[in-house]
Image (cartoon, rainbow, N blue to C red; front, side, top):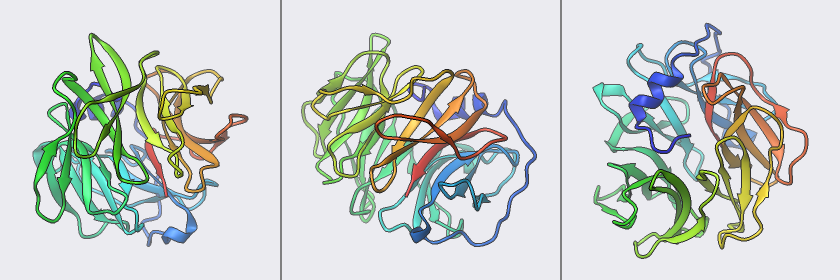
Length: 285
């Protein structure tokens, strides 16, 4: 699970699975084509890739040397930029670029960054705290409470008022909500090592992962539902833009290798999107 390892540990553990598959580096399809952006080691280091939900148009959009690993891609609300976590420059940090891989720049220290619904702020993890950063001024403030010393995976609610995140105390992970301006954290779910929450487009549910499964739950903690019942390990679920599907990655064990799948939000038969290499951290836009 992504909680609580630091970014460097993620890269080292995921780098065990390599593939030499090549890919087309031509222009990335437009937002209207409904893309999934993800990271993969299929060309060597961990880079950012895109694919259509039907598995077509697989494209690599970042490149670099063996020490430059890129993970955790997230597309901005306008569909023109991608946030990602990277080891470029010799230390982990948050970066952004155009969706075609150009205009790459480092934003700040930290990782696991998410755009606000308006695209003017970021929520990210920095030193095990959840912070909100204003992109224009560069100012940032901590919003996770002191009583939760190990936090990760912030996700904005569609109305921009709250963040869902995972917090770890006494070795156990749980889901919480907190106002964007900070305050008391509201517990959502505290069983089965829950983490990686992400909101549905209409804000009525959260998708999250346990040690082995993808589940959904209401933000008030009610109507918990297991979505993936089959074998293996399923992680990093995200809703499709229309809220009808969930994209996730699946591995035969917690060490992968990982492939991308999609499944109806109510559960059912999963549909494989990618194979070969290891594909993780999908974001569907």
